[in-house]
Length: 203
View: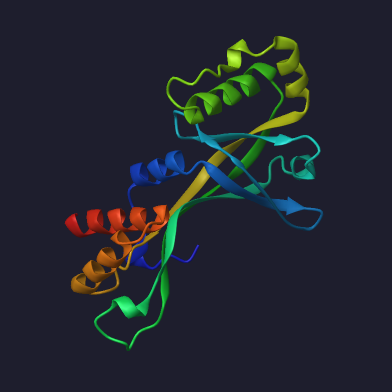
């Protein structure tokens, strides 16, 4: 990923936090001689050495993926930045965004208990607090059938790149003008970018 120095994340804890908060990723590998992508949830293990996930078995991506170096892309908030918000017209539109790229080698996981533990972790993470849904209360025969329809995998992390583009290459006063405009918008991403920009100004 192209990362100018002023947009680079140099704190591993920040990249881990972005991954945890934006776990629905794009996983890219080679399949039949060309790039192939799947959009799926990935979870970071507690040691931060692996990403865990699973494919639907009909998805052909998993059949050639073992031991490949793959790229998982995690997208944070993003939004358009209009030049009309600036104090000058001698500029152009841009886009502010947060993204993390994780590289690593894939290992297929066939141990049913490991796969089920990974699914349980996903449910625990994304179900709302107090939800009536509990994976361990689902009929065991149904879960056994489900497990046959998925292929578990984990990615041994070899490299992580993080980029936070928040208008840091602009003067402080211009950044404040952008924040004011974004805070007046109703979109969730716009407001998240505004909040991150404020945090960046304070740091």
